[in-house]
Figure 1 (cartoon, one colour):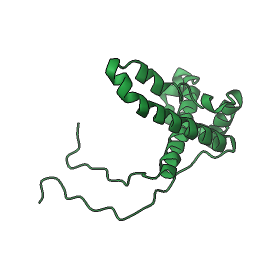
Figure 2: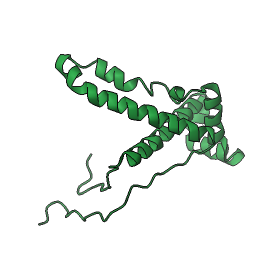
Figure 3: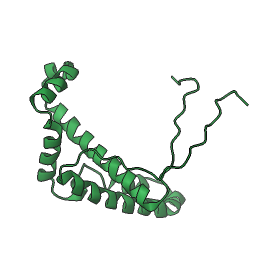
Figure 4: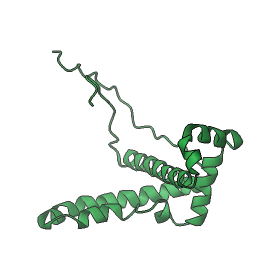
Length: 153
């Protein structure tokens, strides 16, 4: 279902530094979600059926439990390319599945994306190993023009 007149307005990350910082943030988020999902898989059925209560209890027992789980994951997977499964191969797998000419035309973008992902994963791995789990880069902000609502002139 679509929400009538819903919109999401944001400024694009346009400089190389902004793009890399945003990608680093995404890698931190994806690694954290991966660790969280793996943790939830180990819960009992009863714990999963009352997930909100289970997570609340986990937070009450140890507010740092997720940060510690991420730290354990990184100890068990010490290389940046192990930050979460498929981090460096997902673009190549998608490219490999393309047909003939598309493979050729999409190769530069695939390789550029792989380079950005590699750098971002390395940077994310470094800050996660240092214990940082919350990271929100700031883009160079300029005034965002207000977009007229749909149906108005």
